[in-house]
Image 1 (cartoon, rainbow, N blue to C red):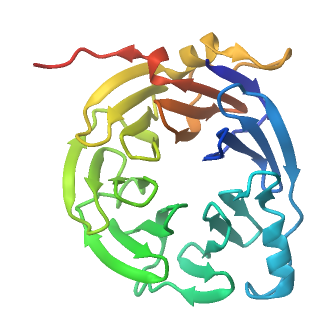
Image 2 (image 1 turned 60 degrees about the vertical axis):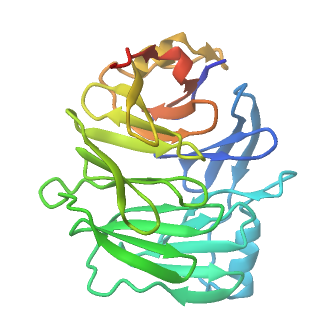
Length: 304
């Protein structure tokens, strides 16, 4: 099934799937408020009101207590993401390894209280960052277009793939679980690489990319059109376009999980996007969240 829910009056910026036995969708409407839904049915399972983060060392007791508040009860999984006034926090499934992103360029890796600063020599600013929740790979793109890859606290390399981020400042990333499939983009080019930084495949789009997300295996890459609002699905291994649909049409045909709602304007861009197994995609437009899958999109003819 597909479903939709209207949650906020402003754009929702973060969606993450929690790969529990029954997959969950975590939706952030405020930095301290997360709504947790059953991914398949849209049933609201929990509203997590997070405490304010303490002013304390990352290895300190108060900070460790705060991290415990990010665990989703009865699942054994942590929230994938949290944001304080000064820090973005990315967490592995069990919450034992964390990445802290500060000041637009500083990365700190926390392995159960063992703290390491990741080397980013001469980097002025990071434009995009993704964190692998399974094995704790960190992938980021700096303001010169170079791609930095880390495995936990160890640097695997810095790679120049010719990304043109200078004029547009656009940089996008999607990383599969385990880090085997890494998709990088400057808003027009999409390049598929592995953790060794070597390109496997690349395409040039005819549109400006808004958001990009891949399934856990990397077999599906979902990309939103920044201008038209079209959501497109690509095969992850060869970047072949297979399905597409206007996102507003996916919303219109999805089941409502509430009585009262405000549909987003037709020209609204997708503000958050995530993908899961079996072609499932979830996205936010304005304050509305929709879960759908590629079977609700138009399949494109295969070129022979």
